[in-house]
Image (tube, rainbow, N blue to C red; front, side, top):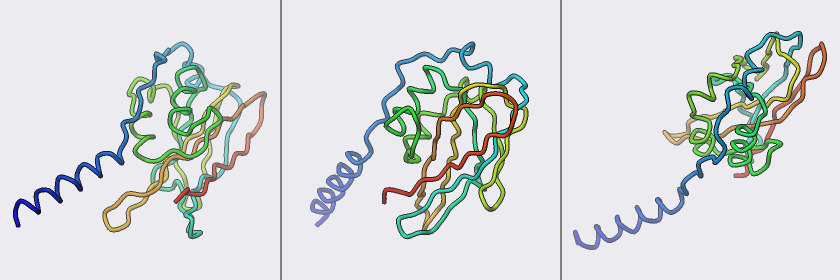
Length: 172
């Protein structure tokens, strides 16, 4: 009986491990000079709403984690492509997003804004440039974490307010 339990346990662990593929590391080196413009002051604002809908229609917002603004450069393009499958953005599972975007140096070259209960956010004083807006939206169900990151590439030219909606429907 104990031997049978050990075999079943080993098979279960192997199946679980095979379902969690390793996230590939980016090949592009982070360049602070290519990212530094995000820290400068500008005359633009970015505002919008970030939400993630389940396949059953339940809507979750960014109210717990907020939204992050990253500069577009070779490094961030590669991160977004590895996470979502393309350089424009999209959806990335929590495990993939966390593994790729957990770079202390890269995070120092970003801005963060909180969200209200409806998922509304606003960035002030943003300089002209290209950016990725990323909202990591997650929740717990019976101690299991669900959700992921919604990402979108945007351009901010001139003086004004850029309105953006970050929305996605979960693939499950």
